[in-house]
Length: 615
Image (cartoon, rainbow, N blue to C red; front, side, top):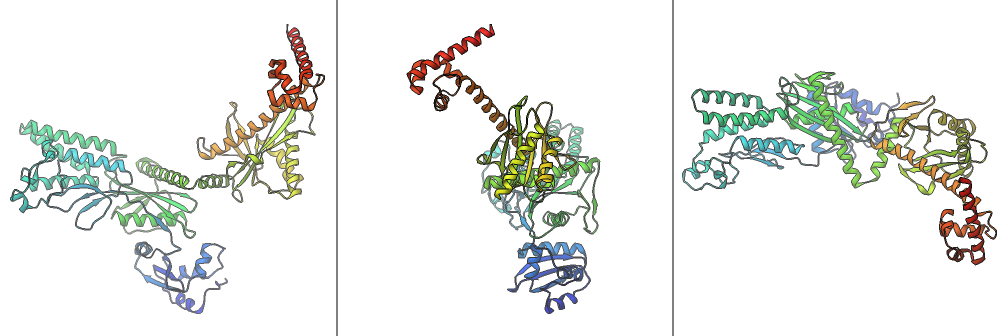
């Protein structure tokens, strides 16, 4: 196997002395800057693979050409390698590594490190002993938690320095929050520190997702108070119990027996990958976060998901012993089981994660399209390319349709879409010249033959995709002209309609197969628009031609009305019906007095004859 030309004696010496152990390797350029960090189960085998073959043109070849030095770190396990790789990428931000797009700071809930702690929302993490929960990418979830805590526990919201010395010295007075029963006034000693901290301990359990234990403790307290005949106190505890049970019923997504589980899913769009993370405690979603990776090399979705798992578990300090994933991963974490559920409650959790990641993907695409409208067109073209396995993006799409009534006034139309948008300047109309009678297949062949024969002769660009307004028959007659006669290679698709004349399916290939396109999606709407546009254009042309023929037959028999006067009349009055209704004076303004008299008399006689024939 040929070695890469950049594999000089210096680099070869490093690679030959690499250990067959797990570890991290770092590639540096000639300036000594780290340009790539990677992990490996076997350092020697992995690093040598970069130099042992000539890579295809692309990012990997560029990376290898810039490697001037190699450093490495040996670790004990693959898990250690994953963690170290993640930390080094975040520290050095190498040019050719996956880029974590985590620019939006989501809020967290903070339990402050004070003598009487406060529970607040914040976007800043300050390492001062305070406890943080989150961040929360779904703001309504965080607000619901804060509202529940406020209603369960009357905690202080002021910024006073409530130290034991200041409280004992009587430096404070009660405020409005005490009078409206949102606070029990620990500032003047009306609530003890022990009672306040007991409330804070329960708040932390709720924020951890342990609502079931809190509800059970409240139930025990309520029953004990009732047994002591302290019914008013029992009622207050009951109200708290009902609040937390109502919250649990809304937040619990699966069976409460599922506890301390991580769930991950991934969705891709070109060079972007979106990963969703859910942490489940007692059947409730306790933490949820979705983020984006930007590919820099040829990372697979398995590679990206493995990186995302390491990143999220480290960020959230998760110690879950089970991780639910959508597909098998080449990843081993000590004491952790990976599950790919097919049914049941765990499948419900995976589906919820997939729903979240797909929605996040849609939201990010919408944001990007607002900033750059061209992205929507590229995405639609990429979808068509992927659905039909086209060799390149369908930047130029042409579609054909016929229109006639029992073979009379037969016409065809071609509409052109450039970058998924109609290019009306390129639309073309065709009068059918060689076909007699209502033969749609022969008419389609004539038009396709004329259009692309001329394109070949003149050297004009050929389309990346031809779409016929019809099913398998129309596709086949177009193929015969394109491939058999003209020897061109242009992908051909067909759009068929249902019995209610609505776009129903996309056909592709020979023999044609139905390509599933979900109704209501942007791709479906684009195809529907192409079909509606070519049909509209063909019908309009047909009506115009038929109308002109009818108009011509009515005016051609009038003495003194030649082509110029006929054109002037139609330009002025738009139709024969309006010409009939016009007065002699109005007609004379266009064709002169004498011709107007002749025209009025001829049209009146013609109308009378038509009326008598009807009678």
